[in-house]
Length: 278
Image (cartoon, rainbow, N blue to C red; front, side, top):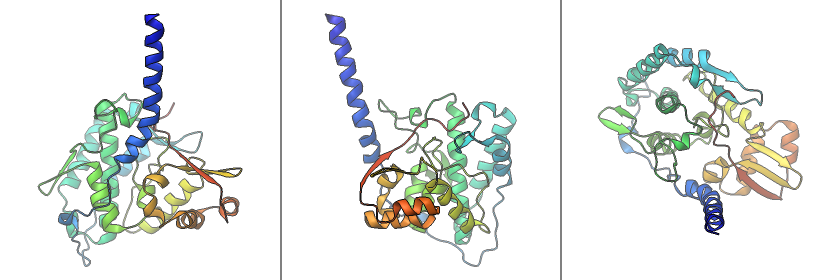
């Protein structure tokens, strides 16, 4: 009898967790709130940041999986390449992004975010999901952990995304560029972001995600969308119509036709498994 009671208690607890975790994550999404310290830029700057070390790591360890998702082979990263990654981060730490022009800044912050994410996963590997890193009982990930020191400031991943990138650039394509090391996330781009190619790279990132089933998938009278469109809805449009217009802007013809005039139910989901080969 005691075992049966324990079984029912555990089942109820697991069901509660399954209900609470998505809502808990959504409630922890920070608002876009500019950190004024990082607001400056130099429109006349000719400085260029060297992202070749990051590109070399992407060339070596990033691969397209069978489902069309870019996968990073964390298990294969050598000690020498971990040092190479740290050297790249050290070089970024020695650069003051406020001395850069805007597009160079954008590339700097996105590449920094993605490289830091890979670094923190490697520091805790093997791990099944980035949400199992740090955090307490609910294991909601490392996003609020201080990971990087720059110009006397301690930065978290959330600082970079929500206090710098989102409020400074006000571009929904940010969400297709930063990668959270998860299968449901927009791809970790195969090419390091650069100021010169930024617009093309951001458009390609948006098209790639929106036209993949993990981003947008019509299902009869329903529409399945990635949870990023729920978590950051205001970034993509003021309302449902604005969101659908955003999606249609990058959709291939068949998907655009399915989105045209859509008035059914929208369901959101997300796959938090680590973006590694299986």
